[in-house]
Length: 384
Image 1 (cartoon, helix red, strand yellow):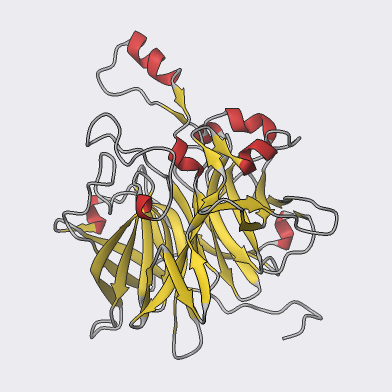
Image 2: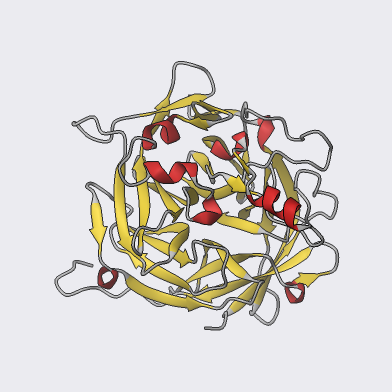
């Protein structure tokens, strides 16, 4: 399917200092629109980016952005590692793979995954073997937290602390350290997910790549593991801890459970992003391994109001779109509701990892795709 519209994402050409080894526009992992503010992140950075969306051009087929502002995550969180490693070019990335908003806070999720090194061109056999055996846990990847959002014109900005209607809001993150956090410690004992926490994300190991707010709970979509074709969503609730700037897991129900698991038959694909639309959650499904496509957009009905564990067969998921992808480039990685047209039809913004040269304009502009979403049909017996 071809996009119905495009958006020109214009980044400041001198904002790459918090991004490892590539430009911000080359490797966008997540997107979220709030009013005129479009939030984005590169998965090899330790920041999030805000662009301001402007009106469509005269053709009505493209929109553009301006006013790039960068928010360094260390300004809001006490991350376990500093922004830079041994050299200025060595970034201790947060690998942000999830953004969501509940109207009060911007929620962020790092991948929580281990990383295996890749052989480089020119490596001999011995060095290639050594790289493939090197697995690391980058402490900033275990970020799961929130930042207060406050109005800024017709968009939003972030504050470490904010007072809104006499209520104080503060940035905070789940308790953890360089080796994990409270969630990963709990999941290590899980019969389904525990064995995969010791496996790198790109090897079908534990890897968060989607975040959605569902009432007072959070849904964490996993790119991996995929279990016999079934993808996993972990549901949790977070509340303030006694320690400033820290959150802790809270019970989901009267039984005191600290997490739920939802299994979705994506026929071998993993979850690459989640996006709430009304009472539903849109699921971006793609390869769990480092492969080209297929990429699908599916509708998980009622998921924004969870209340019990779910095992959802493939036929129970509504197929919305088949998204295009490239060979080695242009992998759909992040989705966001973008606009609602005069006819009431909603549209979806898609950003890509490994952006192709054809998407890159000048020194700092990137072309992102917008797709018109089919109207949501009602099932027999379903109330409007």
